[in-house]
Length: 96
Image 1 (cartoon, rainbow, N blue to C red):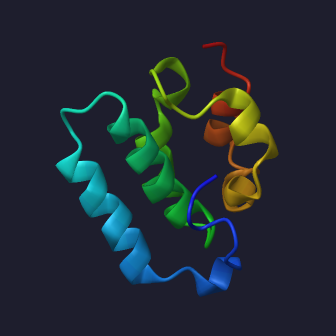
Image 2: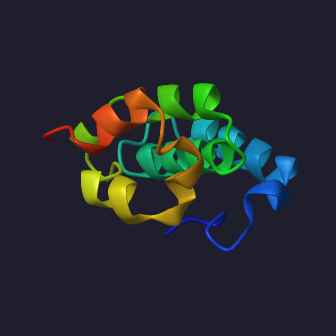
């Protein structure tokens, strides 16, 4: 679960997304914290439909330790803004 889950897509606070992106930068050497920070930043972009910003953060997430699982990508409402994108569908169906 990430901190954008309870927000409606139009109410995602740009400051919160910026915080998640900054957190991603500060955890770049931490293989356990960085995937979670990337997932949070990606979800913050995906909720309002900014798929082109979200997907690069998720590209290798399912294959990383502590990354987003394919089940999480399929089931979590955070990704509703990206579901129709073929690149996201490929991630949802990827084998780790």
